[in-house]
Image (tube, rainbow, N blue to C red; front, side):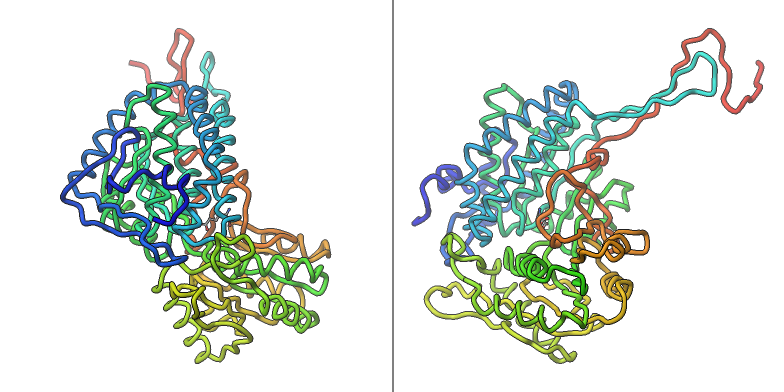
Length: 513
Ligand code: UN1
């Protein structure tokens, strides 16, 4: 282990190879298959975990069921206080956890820190929210009657998270679920279980300090079969899944088959429209961060730039100028802005998407190659690509989880650009750069962007936690994180109370017995 000691201390897993955790206890199965985790940065073995067996899974669900019976009775503001303490612990470990996320996933350290900050932010948000799980009151049509609604916890929330945000997206779900009175079972991506284990370690301290039972926050290490088991399991009323549209469709079908609830956050095909009224410098900077940040592996990554003919040449030139000097390399080195892709399969997907789009008529302006040499020995580093295309090319219609930026020229008014932007199956994030009121407002109107996120003079990625996060169409329709996204983690109950001495019926129905 050449890796930093503070981060390894967080993990403490060398001797352990855990397959699950119930918050306080760690599973030590002998049946699970050993699973080695290599860093995409330098191809070094970081640590090994074990895949949970069906028995492990049962143990975790039983523990979670028992914990739920207790946790749902804890007053919501007290649950909020536990989440506040988790936020405090995360603050203490921000640098170490950020580094681990960076080392295991490959994002630059700044973004690793940003991801932990998102977790801290959602803890703060959830803490306040714990006193605001409001329902409405209604006026009854009957005399001496009162109506109101309240929100109750659902039970065990299954959280399936993706490699690209190995910890933040879990925290959006888990912290809201927790203040709502739920317990959760987290299956992290099998590509990034170590960051998840570190989070469980951080949590454990808070659980111990507060004498809480195990089973409130659970972790299960597994692959797609574990995800499928969760989707099928009636004891998990809500499955929140983040990942590919292919995975989401499978989860949705399975969960719908048992009439469970699914919260899906799936693929995006996010575009920035740059109009003749844009601040071009700002638009270009936002486009570059959106396209190459996290090496093109955010669900909010900018994949398409829809640029008006009048400013097209200028945007293209400025982009190429920046792309030529992008610092690509070890993302723990603070001078680098672009790290590796998650693994060699992702490199392969990048290369073949570029091959395909070339055959469809795409014109590669820069990048698209795999980097070699000592610094890039892991075989996971690529040159981000810019490719001139038409929106209808089949490859442009797909989300390739890599730094490929498609340049699309439009002519005419803003509506032509909006139509191109909407003409994909996905609907996560979108943006327009324009200082023209008409263009900006048209983009935000009912005939504008069809995405869950629509920004003006800000790129497609890097959303704050305070807003609801998610998208339409093949993105899956779910909303996580801020605003009133908490409601999906609760069941709504309508209550009518008669404080009178007669029994009038609604709708004026007479029924005398
Ligand atoms: C994701 O890629 O799954 O808006 C989440 C963003 C981040 C979250 C991305 N705050 O880019």
